[in-house]
Amino acid sequence: MKLRLLILAFVAIFLFPKETLSQETHGDPEFWFLMLNHYKIDDQWTVGNELHIRRTEFMSQNKQFILRPFVNFKPGESVVYSVGYSYIETHPYGKYPRPITQPEHNFWEQVTINQTLGKTTLSHRYRMEHRYQGNLVETSPELFEVDGYDFSNRFRYRLTLRKPISEDYFIHIFDELWVSADSKFKQASYNQNWIYLGLGRNVGNGNVQLAYLHQHASSGGIVERHPSLQVTFQYDF
Image 1 (cartoon, helix red, strand yellow):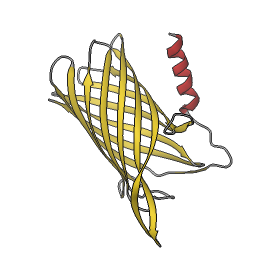
Image 2 (cartoon, rainbow, N blue to C red; image 1 turned 90 degrees about the horizontal axis):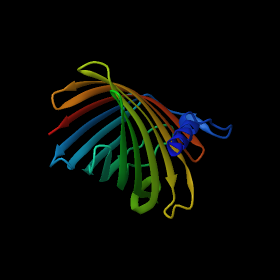
Image 3 (cartoon, rainbow, N blue to C red; image 1 turned 90 degrees about the vertical axis):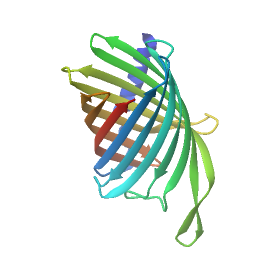
Image 4 (cartoon, one colour; image 1 turned 120 degrees about the horizontal axis):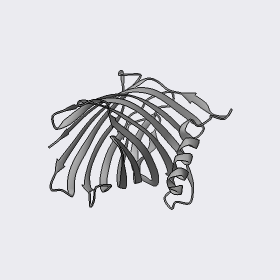
């Protein structure tokens, strides 16, 4: 119980980070789309995939593409162990764009602990990511290419609440904290925080969700704030 209270306090500290005078804040409205699928092998094993398409300046500019296959192992009712891989393309966007699209190969492991409080499900998701990000180098004036990959780590903690409000509809709320770390875990820093407020409708073997997502990210003295609309389709085979 004490550990959970410490985690919640830690999340609360970063829920609304304050910018210092030396930081510049910018951002645009965004539109995110997620397709989530699961295929149940047996009572313990599941494979799945996520497809993310993210656009900024609401819908006028590509921001990010993610393909994320994964495997889940559920030994009991309350714990799920997962491993997965994410292929990520981050396009030039915003006030300080990358010179070209940056690829990333991201390997991760995850533990999710679920609690049931009446009809409400509370989930704690802990994910450790091992990131290989393309190193963008200038080969000639205004001409860039990917020259190798830089390795780093990142920790993510997501606290999720899901509650049915009728037979067909439910609310889905989460807060997720991201902490970046170097390759040897010697240095760590705040990376970003997400707040998700969603309404979902169960449809057959899946659901559809419409949500407001607020992203706060910080890197190198530059702060991004993106109010976003997210549409999610989930279908389980």
